[in-house]
Image (cartoon, rainbow, N blue to C red):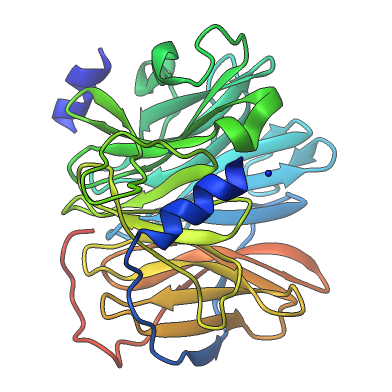
Length: 342
């Protein structure tokens, strides 16, 4: 069913990581520039906090909101139970998204055709989903999307989690999978292309096509197949090719903890990094490895989760009033304005 849907429209660990990084050619970095900006806020009505997680070239945005207790949307009277829910922001209107029969729905990406992807829980297990916006009927959803058991480190584990993070314009999916009680040591990035799941390859040599180091998470995929992600515990980001094979790793200048969350068709990579005082900042890394540090004005932390082909970015920031989602269009000063497909 899912393949038909896609045609229409993730002392030992430290050693493995250091070996992988030492054998990968990291692109040289230019000195970073800085930009402070005032975005358009995204706050789901009545919620405690909001995060914007994905945006397509039409400007449609998906994300999550949290309710500390049951909260009411004053615009339509709709009540959301305490916990995490997702939303679609389209034409200025918010639509709640909850996977039927699941809890803690997290919408992470939205494709060019309006297909929304993410994950949800059933009991203690996390599953992926895809749905046709606005995702209001059971028939709109394709779920569960689960990485095959044989690709897990421990195929017989009862707690096998699959997270879908992004969908490309061509319908490829990326994300990560792991086992609940061994998250860091069993987490791997994955790609679903033409109905086949592959695990991220982390080469330890020129002819190595078999190493699958743990602690990796695929987060973004562009129309041409470029994938970005990171080693979560060490804060090293990577770029992988369409075969799901890492080709380079990078950190924000200054060797800082760096998490890459998305990439567009022009090769712009966005995410967050921690400075030497452990404050979170957003960043943009261009195709030419030029870096820009990005902060919402007066925010104590900024994270960028998504970018489209128009260089519109989405994310979340924290200030004295709480946690907010946002959308903002970056300046085009270091490249021509390209409206191509993301």
